[in-house]
Image (cartoon, rainbow over all chains, first blue to last red; front, side, top):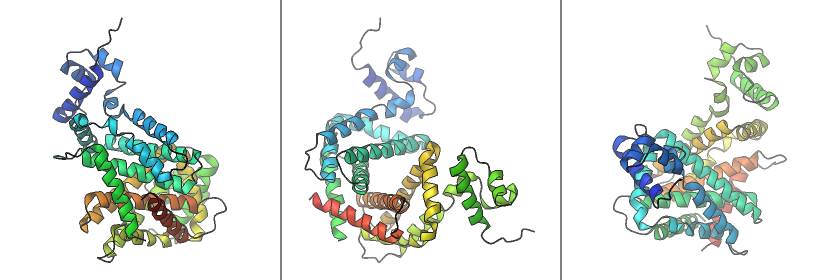
Length: 190
Length: 190
């Protein structure tokens, strides 16, 4: 019988990120991570398929949250308002207490070409899913792809700002400012 | 002595795209491509490092053209105007007579997951290069990343529209319309 251990996944994740930073991602094994929190490798694999999933495991949840947000948007919302509202719904996933972990994750991914590729492909996949969800609401192809691409760009830039050393604003505030920057930037060019 | 054969690269490229479509990318070899135009495999490898380069070989030229365009932009151009002008300079690379070849290329890349990944990574690399070129002109980080991401999104959407079955507008006209759509889309959300 497997006993339910509250917070085990989070403890493994925190230990993994610490080891990835201190020892290097490639030189850290699942056994190392489990050992760091006094657990067995087998326990690690009950929570994660592999060590890469420690970094990317939560992204399906984020994608689903965005798609749910699009489905729930007011029928008369513009395509960009729809994407914006859906991305605002992500804020609870990025509370202040997660900022140090997210920052470590960004550093590890940025430093490893294979992880960086995976991150880019995940972002592209998110944009494709958002565009499909917009098309399902009757948004024309070109608008759907632009709105999806803009949304993913804003989200990516906002995450980067949020985890920067010394940053103290909330993820929600930062993401709103990046949206405003996008709107201001395009307004200048008309 | 290697004799200069005008148009050899173009003939190899056209034959390769035909074979990739009819026989499948994975089942086509460099020797097949060379043979289709009455040349040796060795000649193929004088023009392309491998068969994948037939699909991606021109992209360094495009990236350099965009970066040259950014460097040449008026000092008082806004970040988005700078990117827009640089992308307009790409139009000569997409004349009407290349549309069928480009369309075949898009189809092949879209159908092969490994090629699709490579295409996404190339796009992401282009966005990174554009953002760096904007930062070198004094554009702040967030604006540079958003303008670069928007430009690459517009370019990608414009290419997709341009190669669509039955499309007859020029690449330049289409890309301008996609830019206008981006501006209109963000204007609605203010």
